[in-house]
Image 1: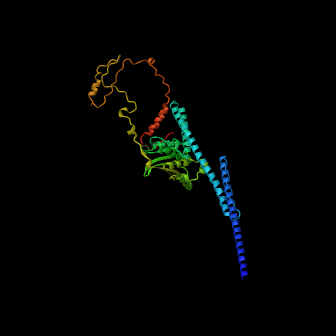
Image 2: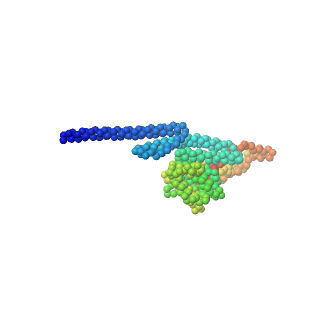
Image 3: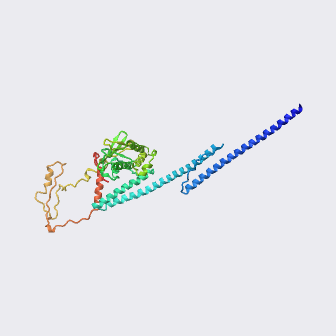
Length: 442
């Protein structure tokens, strides 16, 4: 019995040793598998790092690395880990390319801003030189050509400013408030078909203005809308520009007689005008249709509202609403700049002679009774009534035709025509604000 017990104990001891050996083998196999998996993960991470580094070097060399292929890993216990690592590699390279592209766009925008500023300065100098050239001649043909070049350079300036606006910068600004009438006329003068445009500002054109940092930009915005209206409508029709006070501020309408716009197209354009950053404008940019995009950027920067809607003629009316917070009062021209009554430069008056006795000049013989004529004239009038002019006879002033002196031949007056044109424009801006329709010139 005792021997049986001892035998069973030996068998149990051997079984325990075998179990410990099997457990050790299993643990060793698990550790080996874990080490293998860790080694595979480390290798995949090293491959990702190498791929990202190569992609970065390729971008620095000016190339564009391809995205790694997202391949399905073979069936294995670590398949999910391999799949996650492969997706991580693709996302890392894609993020690197995106950051590079965005940084390039930022650099490109800054380059465009700098170039636009330099070009704008040169265009401004060209316009100043043309203005000086206008003052050096009074030849009508030469002045007409100078005005034509001036109009071309003005349109060129608007294109340069559009480039700056698309780059997030405005190049237009003045120190003083700009009257609404000047804003509208300036916008019309920047379009190609300006003779087709009629402006109706009413009294608001001279009484209301905009701050110096808003007025020039509004001129640019309206010029884009007017240009678009002229290009899309029949050349035989007029484009109307109207301004009037509304409850929310000031409303400016640009109305054309174009063919009806498709409702879907109008909705897309209105979406662009309301939220230019949310619309894909790549198609418009490739087609060169930048006017509404520029207008949308300007409106967004100042909080203006722009809406396209169909009018009663079937054409399109662009409605621009300027908030009341951006409006300023313009002082009356008569109150601010009118000269005194006795110094007002009016038309030439008839020459009047003083009503006091005059001393006879050498060679002048006074007629009997004429010396007291002024006094007699004054005696029959009140002290406030002006004296009547007295005609005096000049002795020895007649010369035969062959002895008369010829009038001196005067040279041309450079700048006379240009000054006349400038005066006409200034007078139109400072004239009566009740005029309803004006036809500006470039």
